[in-house]
Length: 299
Ligand code: GLN
Image: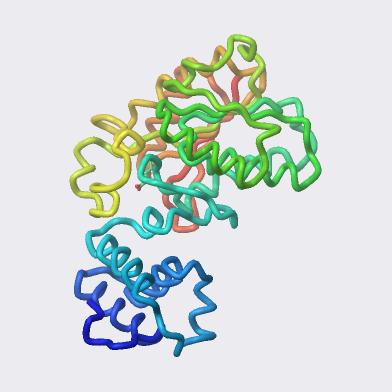
């Protein structure tokens, strides 16, 4: 790829990389070429600008080229660099976990708002189902601890052992292990009996893409992200019933459920919650008026 450049500089190699990505049909080719070069050189992107004339060693060039080829094959940037920012935290990711999405930050906003008024500390046992990278759990724990709170516990589950390894790494990276326990199992399966009727909040971003829509997703998602974290069955609603139904055994009186949903799934998820006896059921949309979350209260 860089054979015509005898001694390529940072500036030259970025241009080449951006050209390559753009030919491969990658949007934001220039930006991504910079991110990948910074990653190959183990630098911050900003440092590239400070030394545009620096010569790149053959070894670094090869590393950069490998990364460009992967990106050209639609591998998501986050899987190549092994990291993704979520709630201003730098999280470790790999192909065993869904890459945290910006819209999922709304779940963290809602949880932090719940605990910020000081009236909800009796809801301090929190369960997260399908934690994946641990993004929601880690961001919540990190921010509550930063605000000086220690009196809470998060029980995070995932059916995937490999995903839990990623969550564990993020927990260690952000030093929030003292308030988090991880459990390997489908939804509630692995949780201890000791927390029955003691859980204040159940939060989940379950798989919710209708099975038939998976094939139409961007290749970055369809070919690389774990299908188990995306496919929510025929209507995309398979997980909401069991989460809401079994959740009733775990929740305290007044406990909350917070579920990420796909746009257009609000009505059905709200109906499920109502039929199961939940109250204060609310649909939350984002700034673009897309349905993003449903919250409900037990009793
Ligand atoms: N928001 C994700 C996407 O669009 C889906 C996440 C999920 O199914 N929970 O790819």
